[in-house]
Figure 1: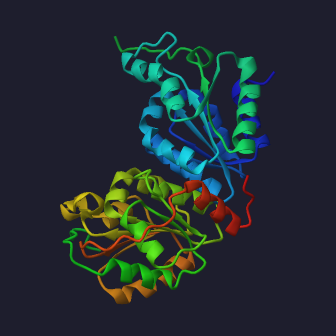
Figure 2: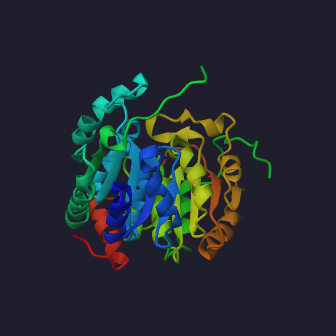
Figure 3: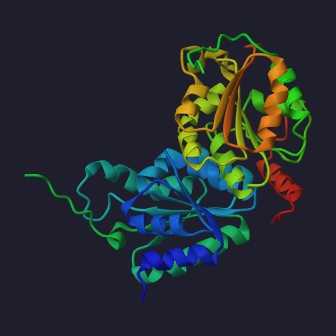
Length: 172
Length: 200
């Protein structure tokens, strides 16, 4: 059984994703690494997540399928840019790693974690949550089919429980 | 290059500048930032390969990047204003990392937020967008203050020899609005159809 992170990459390949835009997150590290090494993919590092929303739409205008990787805190950075999706009915697939919910140590991650599903839904984006490794590939595949088959927008939330606790150590 | 010059609200007639640019860019794909640049582009002649933003402020350059990466053999022009580009200033860093040779950003710089009452923008207050782009690793940047520089700009962007940003100083005057279609889905579908891509 391959790790869910590698299964996720395989799903993106199978769905002919060419541009992988991201603001880094530890939970996406494997995907970012593999996308960067793949000759048929272009990994694009962003300064802020909203750039990725616009980039994904531009990619589609030119015939490329793209995906946006971010963590939950980034969703708040995108809100007005999400207006592109409903106005133009661009296909949009985001994979969002959750922080601020499962054994979180940093309280600054919590407000956006709580708001993430409702913010996405209020901007018209379908939300699909995965909490167990066995469900990752199937859920992302289903989301990709919906997005590119029906010109829809969808976000798959990868639960913090799935990704694992962030280990905090201090010098003391 | 001296990047310290500021936008004074003096410069070219924006409609004339865009008309001169577009008459030499028949095959170029264009993303227009919201507000006056979209009106200028539409006034120069509507075409299927024009995509006009009516919102999503700050998104034009990043959208152009996604398009340029998807269509590496065709020239992509992002035509936007100083306010819109300032909101998307991080995208200049993102583009500077990717360096698509077929992407050019042209900022129509009047140093003003024209849609909201001509309040001064950062480019009127000491910020140079060509300076930012150069620092972000753009292959070329140019500040344009004369009409005769528009022809060479068109030639340069069509040559696709590197990603560039040009700042055209335009007059801070009110120009009658020329309004393109506001239906984003229509604009998307006709753009893709012109490239031979399927629409749903």
